[in-house]
Length: 65
Image (tube, rainbow, N blue to C red):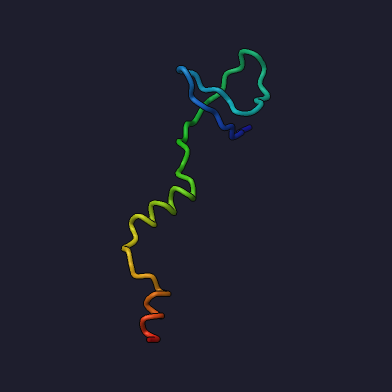
């Protein structure tokens, strides 16, 4: 049976962030997957990479003059 459990690495030890239903001394296989970037981080990166353009409201106001 496979389960996914979040863990934090501290002082050389992986510490589960939730309850794990295992017997004392039971051995398991661990697959480590680094946390991906959050949606907020991705949006900030896109914002920084997007070329700066004029404010569309100001452009429309100028066109209407």
